[in-house]
Every structure is written in structure tokens, then in C-alpha cells.
Length: 367
Image (cartoon, rainbow, N blue to C red):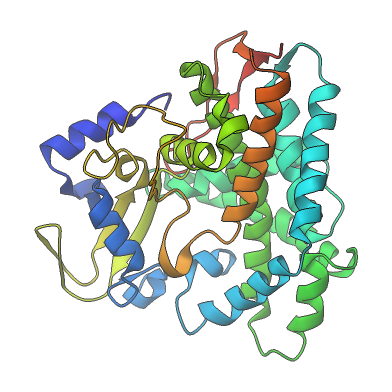
């Protein structure tokens, strides 16, 4: 969990496209193959119902449906997201960063005291709602993450579905109790009369909220861990922030794995993938592919070009990619100027998650 790259390199050198019997899936580690699957909507699906597999209603959302269900819901959520004043949002986020860092003692748990409150406040700002209690959220979120590894640990599914039910209740409250101008205000107004599946929309809003803080918080903590491991990298966030953000996204790859199902027999990467078979994309490996990224295990904050797959590709690319990048830029630009000597004061504790990599606790000293 601390550094999976050596395992991925060993896989790629041994067999970059291999069959994994335990999960009945192909495992792909090359950038070219992973990108082809993500863009190959006519050959690969995110909706396992198209292959005859049952999917609980709670898991029918933007990330798990294809056309014709996907485009109108994505257009609705994308329009609601674009309606925000993003310059003002960036200014408020920078203000949150300054306030959070100014109010902290010298030694902090970066995850609990910076990454999580920052990302929760920011996504709630975008949604136009009041942030929920963080202690409650800390209990609800991990079971949802656990279900991403349900293929390996099916016993986690009931707790994950129960946690989603708690988040669903929060979504329903927000649909009737929100501020003007936020995503919930736009969606609640436009949803009426559009003929969309309301459950699909609500599940997608739940996922937008959850990924908006959980995935983003993991990106921030992993990025700081990478910077600690690579002294001198932090200064690039003041000099070349855009390339620095792209590089920590590539280097950390908080979303380690994505899965798709094959719709038609397909020749890919020197293999024949049969209709009905699964393909597991190791995004963490693709983002360290030496065929695409010279010196892939080096954190090079001025790396350009940087065609990482950290936010996916194609139809199911991350809707909030720009929001995650904006928060990362704001936080590390502030650290670069005012806390350039940030250093660990304890051992990091990693989450035991294969799909969404993350740091559970990161004790640091802020100079």
C-alpha cells in the first residue's frame, strides 16, 4: 500500500496483459491498453447488466451506466457544475486553505485536520449545501470505499450498502434544503419534467459528493506523502503549479484500479478478449509505464507532456477533475510559500484498499 509500483513493474515485465483466474478477469498494466479500453465504448462497458450480471439499485449511477442512460444525466450534472462561478470558488478555496493552515498547531494529522475538512467544505460549496458532521462522515465513508474491493472481499457489501443508504438520506434532505445557485438547486429545478430516472440522478449526486471529498482528500494526502519522499518538489507548486499538480496525480494515482466488461470479441494488446470477460485496468501501473513516462518512478513536477490516466478517459472521465486539481493547486501553493519545510513527525498509516489508494493518517510538522 505504501508503494505498489515495484509490484506493477514486475507484472509488466513478466506479462503486461494476463488472465487472473480468481476474479475471472484480464489484468492490464500498460498505458496504451488501459487507455484503449477506457475510450472503447463500443467494445467495453461499465454497466455489468449488459453482460447479464445483477447490480444493486444503490450502485446504478453515472459511473455504472452507458448510453442511452448516461449522457442526459452527465449533461445535467455537468451543466449544474459549470453554472458555478469558478473564479469565486477558487478564491474561497484559497481562503479555506489559509484559514485551515493558520489555525493549526505545529504538529497535525494532515488527513484529519487538513485534507478531509478542506475537501468536504469545498464539495459542499459546489453543491450549495451545509457540510455534514465530520465524525459521522468518518464512520459512513469507509464502508462505501470497501465495496470497491468487493470482488476480493464480498463480505463487505452489506455494510457498504447500509452506508450508502445513510448518504442517500442526506441527499434527500439536501434536495429540499439547499442554497440558491449550487448544484442541488440547479438539479432540483431542472429534474422536474426531464423524464430522467430519479434514482439514477440521486445516486449520481451521492457519488459526486462522496468522490468530491473522499477521492480528493486521498489525492491531497498522497501528494504530501510524495512530496515528503521527494525533497524539493514542493517549490514547483509556486513556480509551475499546473504541471506539478498533473505530476502528483500521475505519481500517486489514488484511483488504482478500474474495471470494465467486454461486449464483443476484441483483439487488444496481443490477446483476444472474449465477449463477457472482465478487464481490470491497473491505472497505477499505466501511470508508471516507461513507454509513456520517462523515468516513471521519479516525481518530476515540471514533467510535460503528462498524459496520465488519473481522472480516466472517455465517457466516464471524472466529472470533478478540475475541482480536485484546483484544491491541490491551492493547498500546495500555500504550503510552498508559508510551510516549505513540512516534514513527517510519525509514520503514515495507509488505508487497506486496493481500488482507492489512500493515507489514513499522516502526522506532520508544519514549519
